[in-house]
Image (tube, rainbow, N blue to C red; front, side, top):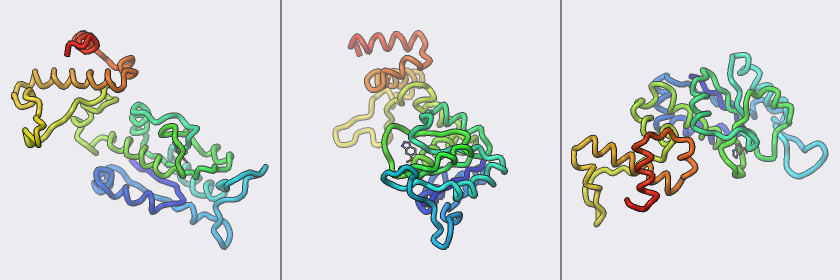
Length: 240
Ligand code: 5OB
C-alpha cells in the first residue's frame, strides 16, 4: 500500500511515520509513505500558499494552485484522494477497514481557516476525526493513517485484531500482566487458573460490563448471542 501526505508541515508528519508499528511497516516494505511539502509548489519568490478570503473576513485561505500542482500527479498515479476536514464523514473502524483495501491513498492536510473550495474537485472523500477544532489536518491525517495501516495484512498479527474494541462491537476487557500482586492490587484469580474456557467467559463478561457501563449505545449494534444477553440481564439487574 502507498500513502502520500500533502502538507505545509512535512516535519510534523514525518516523525511518526518512522516510529513504532507504522515505521516498521514501511521498513518491511508493506507500506510506502511519501510526504509532500506544499511550500515547494508555492507561488512567486515567497513561495506563497495562501491569500485573503474573497468577500472579506478573518484568516487566510489556502490557494488552489499549490494543491492542484501537488495533487494532479497523485491522481494521475491512481491515488484515492482524502481531504481531512471537520465537515467530512466521521472516521470509524468501518471506514478504516474500507480505506485499508485501497492500494494508494493521498491524504491532504488543510489548515483550519480553510482551503479554496475548488480544491474539492480533486478530492474523492472528506474525513473528520471528531467534533473538535484543530489547527490543521496533519494530526487527523496521522490518526487516519494509524487506524488504516495497522489493518493492512502483515502489519500486525491478525490475532491482535480479534479483541479490538469496535471490531467485536464491544469495548475491550481488562488486561493484566506480572506481578500477580502490585501494592495491594491483585490480578483476578480466574486469569491465573489456566482454565481457558473460564478465562474466555470472564473476558466476555467484563467486555459486556464495560460496554454497558461506558458505551451502552454500542450494544444496539454489537453482535450478541443468547449467552451474552443472559449476562447483560444479570449485569443490569445488579447480580454481578
Ligand atoms: N477536526 N477532524 C476534526 C478534523 C478536524 C480538523 C481538520 C481536519 C479534520 O483540519 C483543521
